[in-house]
Length: 150
Image (tube, rainbow, N blue to C red; front, side):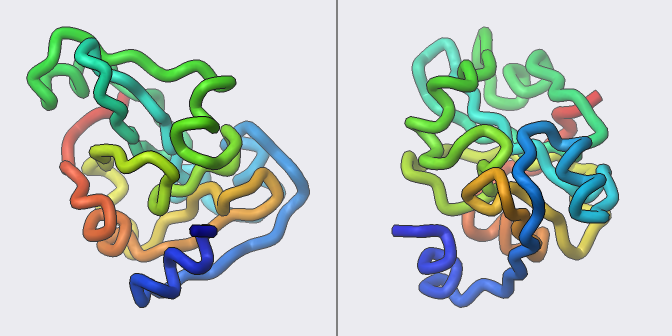
């Protein structure tokens, strides 16, 4: 199911923003005129037990993998390499949305993002962003809220 169909099916408010193709969060924020702290990095990761986890943090932050491991009560969690992430999420790195992935994953959203009514994420491709209500991202993912950035 494509991203737009997924959002319509779930009766979610959304807005796509077309932009030139980018991979890096900073570049995407600049070309789309979106504040970096409201643009998410959606990072596909894997626990030492092989469970895929989506980590959602603000574009101006770095993920704290030790905090994630502690929150999930696992020994280790690591980021999935770029070339493998697309096969799990269904979208290319730089276009990964915060919702609607090919593989159902547990999601953790950084507590700092809750300060925003809406957040921006990859729109399923590298040439568009998607604006969503933060509460919808939490609801659709049944996301865990935690302090996972630094």
